Length: 123
Image (cartoon, rainbow, N blue to C red):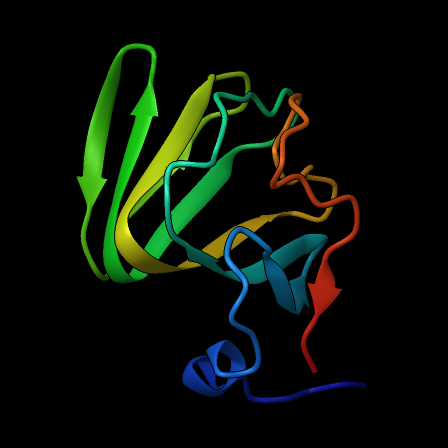
């Protein structure tokens, strides 16, 4: 049995790269990930089988989909339903917590310069 506390600030201190989600925990087939975001690099993409949640810890994140957009401030989140094309654009440097199924592909159905085939796990 592996029960451990996760110090989010300490976990973020372990990496500096942006758009490279780091797995910090598993929960019932879901993964909890931390990611730094900066710059307009995320392409429009879709996750056909999974919903995607973005929780802003620091900074401001703009989340866009065909029918709308929202601005997320610290301690706000949004869930993008499966099948909905979306993209995110951070304002400056943003720290995010993602909670999604382990099968979720980093940039959904699109390959781009930020696509990761295998995510690092922080321990």
